[in-house]
Image (cartoon, rainbow, N blue to C red; front, side, top):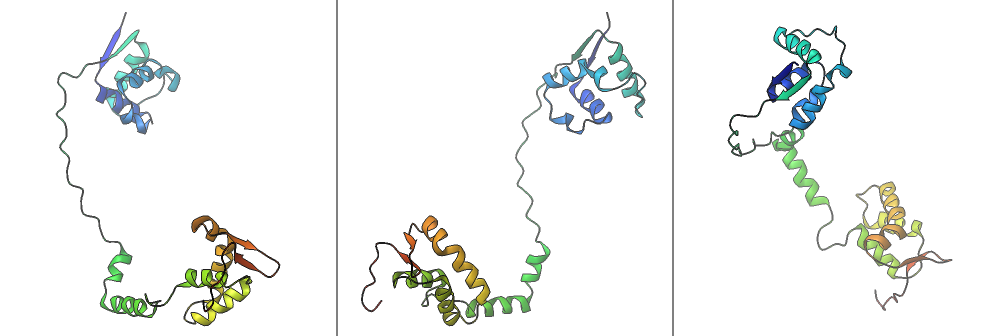
Length: 191
């Protein structure tokens, strides 16, 4: 009765050699099961470039019993290394160029300031006024935000009214014959 005993590392190396690249992630139990059924995975004529592994394969195919040797000593726990600093992507490097910084600053200054309500706030304000169509809201937005793309704001209105405003803002936007409005909200005079 022939018994073959090999280390876990050797078993992993053998499986990698015959095409099982993920063998390193297998535990001892799975490796042993695969070793015992190795004849189902390859032919007896299979040759491996590494001569020692080829001889081992032949021995495994003829073996009655296969064992994975116990580790003589536990490997010391690996100390955690600090992760390498993230490399800057090309887009990040470009952003750092002086002309890009100036362009970014200029863009920041031309966008909506904190004193001026944004697009979503303007949509909500329009709905508070009473029934209004999506087109009328988009028209108001185009007037209030001439620096923005009118088509993009129209898409925003169609996504927000009523779907996202109901879902994300928990507003009760409903459709009436005249358009959309916030249900249960009565506009105050001067609003």
